[in-house]
Amino acid sequence: MREGVPPVQPLSLTGWLDNALVGGVRFTAIKIGGQEGGALLGPLVVDPSVKGQGYGKALVGEGLTRASAEGFGFVLLVGDMPYYGRFGFAPVAPGTITLPGPVDPGRLLAVALEAGALEGMTGAVAAHPR
Ligand SMILES: CC(C)(COP(=O)(O)OP(=O)(O)OC[C@H]1O[C@@H](n2cnc3c(N)ncnc32)[C@H](O)[C@@H]1OP(=O)(O)O)[C@@H](O)C(=O)NCCC(=O)NCCS
View 1 (tube, rainbow, N blue to C red):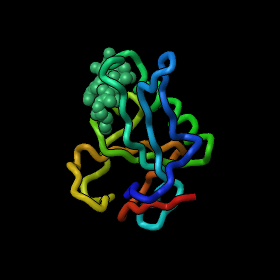
View 2 (tube, rainbow, N blue to C red):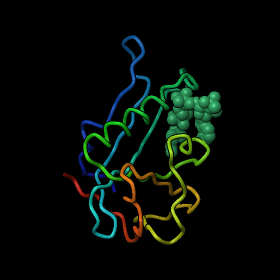
View 3 (cartoon, protein in one colour):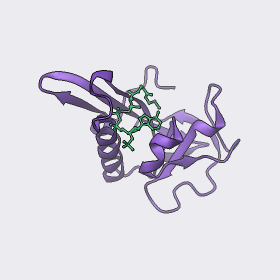
View 4 (cartoon, helix red, strand yellow):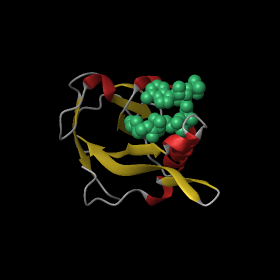
């Protein structure tokens, strides 16, 4: 879904330690069942040499703050609930939102950045560059 699609530049961040790149996060603008205003978070990656030092949390936290400021209503991702739960992500009801490839339903997570932005959200996810 991300292939050939530009990232949302203001939200796609890199983490640096001295002059070394140690992490990054990318966001892609999406629509779900025709409903615009969403962003897909991923990939998120942090160099194992600085694991557990807060880079991941900083990248996600800052990305979500910027997503909200840029007017995105919700963010979707495929990832670990124990990690992303701290940011407000929760599992999507199985079968309501579908990605082009197979996804473990327990790992499809979403957070509303605007109240009610995910209410009644159903359908297929597609890239929707803006
Ligand atoms: C997952 C990843 C991004 C975390 O980055 P990080 O900078 O090491 O993490 P942070 O320092 O921000 O956060 C550390 C906290 O997250 C927890 N954590 C890390 N990975 C976790 C996981 N997969 N599930 C649950 N908790 C996790 C740690 O236990 C720690 O908890 P604490 O704050 O209670 O002590 C990084 O390990 C990574 O790049 N992994 C490989 C790629 C990957 O899995 N990306 C995510 C795909 S969805």
